[in-house]
Length: 513
Ligand SMILES: [Zn+2]
Image (cartoon, rainbow, N blue to C red; front, side):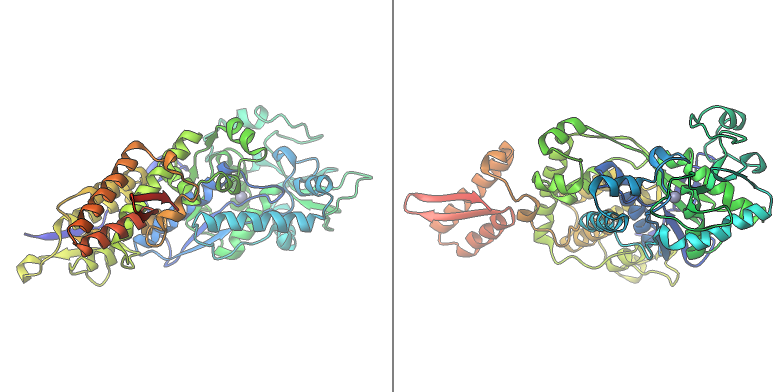
């Protein structure tokens, strides 16, 4: 039997052109910039999706052996209420409301967000730059745009003239004339086109901002779009491979980032070749908010008894480009699926370390060539034995992730492997470890009891109760037959399910931990 495994070409949906394309890195290290949060309040659950999505992308690149440098910005200045160019800064409004300084507000909500990322097992970015520490560079950037003739000044600030940007709006596939004249409602005195946006927001006369810098255009603060161009170029170079964000950014924020960056560079090249956007979560906010009494955020879900990995599983259960309905029923289902996965995987531990396709194939005993790009070979001809079933699953996992990060398919493949009677235990370990390198569900370490801490037997599905009752009966039988080894085995199995058995004079009783 010939074993030839060729990795599937990684294909991603590029918002620039709206089509699936082969991904070809332009450098040894792929630069990845992901738009981060504005830290003036708790991030609700929907706001966490972009980071789990970008994390999945990172894991996919790692799986393909591609090194990545990721930058995620933290907006702690410059983002006005309602994403407009005028009006108060979101941070300053929050500081006034909460009677805290803007620095305290930014720090508090940044830490809360970082904790939520860690709880969701999102790998840390290489750099989390704060916008407030890059204002000098933003002023320099805006000066260059001014020198090149892309701007005009109004009493309210310095504006980018979008009519000077030849490809303006390509990312959003917008009708340029329509956008310039129509879609945005904010009225800015003197603005030439409605799509023109602020690079610098000058202080209104008589209103002194809390966060203020001096600039050639007077005291004020940078416009929101400017920070991402400046920080990404500073930290990743003028051009880098991938820019990600929520789908809402595709229509305005990213359009403006591209316009000002390409105007700044004027080198005739697209600024960033791949633009990836995740869809929204539709929150069943009312139901959750009512029971919890405040913002629907990860910490609230955890208080309600859900494991953070259940939310990650819920997200990965949908494709990143599909809208997902967040409901309590969907979370309950995710929690049950996670518990079953963990319960099934626990006896297989320890799992091997697998981060790449090449490592997975090599662990199955199949030769890997030096590049890891073309793998396989006539293993059988050399008399090597390997688990062909496991190999087929590794191929299926690779096909799923390479197909625009098809995580629902990847999850289904993992479930199939766990049910497959033909796979060897060692092969299954490799398959589970490989799948989880991409899913990031912490399957190598989560304890079943940890996944569900507040269960009572009444919370169990009928089939779960039946399974526990069956195991206890089997254990009683084994003890009667003095088959202590088997009795211990079953006890360990029950233990993995979070079941505590107590032997009493009238027979065994059980409860959940
Ligand atoms: Zn951004």
